[in-house]
Amino acid sequence: MNSFDAFKDPALCRSLLGRLTEEATTPMRFMEVCGTHTVAIFQSGLRSLLPGTITHLTGPGCPVCVTHESEVAAFLELAARDDVIVATFGDLMRVPGPKGANLKTASAEGARVEVVYSPFDALALAKANPDRTVVFLGIGFETTAPTVAATIRLAREQSLDNFLVMSFHKLVPPALRALLADPEARVDAFILPGHVSAIIGVDPYAFLATEYGVPSVITGFEPLDILQALIHIVRMRRDNAPAVINQYSRVVPEHGNQKALAVMAEVFTPVDALWRGLGVLPQSGLAIAEPYAAFDAFKVLGITLKDHPPLPGCRCGEVLKGKMPPNECPLFAKACTPATPVGPCMVSTEGGCAAYFKYRLEA
Ligand code: SF4
Image 1 (tube, rainbow, N blue to C red):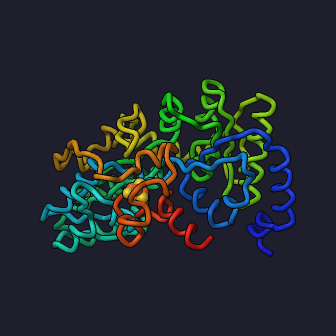
Image 2 (image 1 turned 180 degrees about the vertical axis):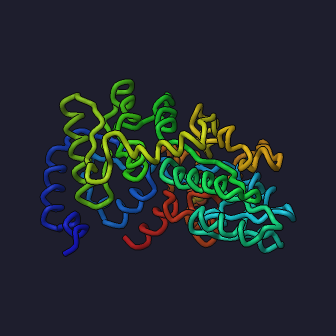
Image 3 (image 1 turned 90 degrees about the horizontal axis):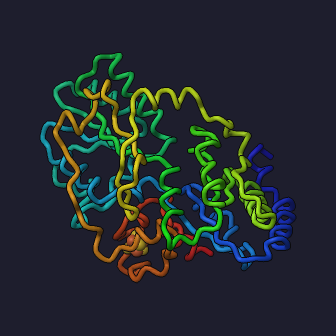
């Protein structure tokens, strides 16, 4: 048995599930804010075992899903340039932008788009192609941003002047604030992302309990982690004692990862950002800070975000806000499937619609 198996122990899971069922006597709607939690809850079978009083909502924690149509349009504008090689993580390739176009179709039409596994691969691509400008598409939350920041710093140290980043990094706490500020929000509790929290720690979530009275638990991805988080939540609600509990202390330091936070603060600056379905959220994104402006694709190439309407028929915005389960979208499993995705929530394996589709069939 490896150390992860211990967190899946069937007897312990049954015991915690029994306790949860016994204690969860009042209705409760909890949202997970991380695509990895979305998949973990479905994959482990937990979703179908939860007591009937508990409703599970998927939230805005899939970076691909929250990438806005206007941002995809900016990628496509970039890909249309002859002097540019676009370097991207693979999961962005099929994210639909205006009129359903995506990087995959752009590539088929002749754009130079390279899939990379890390921003450092994009740096290597720039070194190997000194006559072209390599632009890395910076998508992701606080988990990804420090590595991209370190890559930009390395590019400056190496005086690499053909490497740029188009930063669309987003920050999780402002999105949670926006969800709760919505008068139609029906979220009673959060389970908070383990990976993001390993970078930012516990403090940035304090407002969930102090300002909104919403109990929240930072938790890991194994069944026992999730069950324990739900028991904490049920008890906080029962005792009317909302707080932010760090259940994942084996990975998440109370005050975050100081080195990662330092490099982020050096290279990026917080800005208002566009989220698919949520609109513009104040101070919820990371732009490249002025001292590193020479690596900012927006500034160097003169690209700006333009208005683009939502994809016709796609209800990803409501799915991402927990207002509608994916299978209530009229296109779900009809026009929209993983093979023919209409919206990004069906493209990404961590998207709510893709998870509903996959596990609906296998459950
Ligand atoms: Fe959008 Fe497809 Fe999900 Fe409907 S099922 S919300 S069209 S991604």
